[in-house]
Image (cartoon, rainbow, N blue to C red; front, side, top):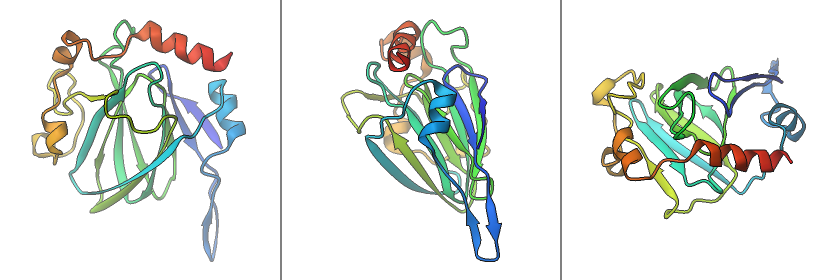
Length: 199
């Protein structure tokens, strides 16, 4: 597996070796050893989520309070998505910046997103199935969102303002408003939490 760090601290891209023959393809989608070598800590799997979205659907930008936050290991199991990570950690040198990676059922790459970062994606194919390994279970009182069409962020959605959003995501605050409301994670607290994981 080839692993490369992202442009934002706390993001890694995992590209598996695809072993194909006349029957299809086999790959190792996740290994504890390669994950630990890249991040310096283990992944404590608490929940797996799967979403199925039609083309043009945008889900996110979602994040959870830190501690404990919710780290995600994200893969597109069928179809293709544009996966976006947003640095919403107050005090981060890259606050407000984002990184976009296409995930699909051909390259089979995965994206690991550390605690405190915002996550969103857009379905590019007619139907897209995304699987998320999560370090914490869903906890509605700790989970928040930033509006994915916030012009300050300028996220690269192919459908622009015509993107399909859930009512919850459409009602999410803009980044500046979420910051004023004290909803955003603190960069120092995120770093301290992750440092504790690495021992």
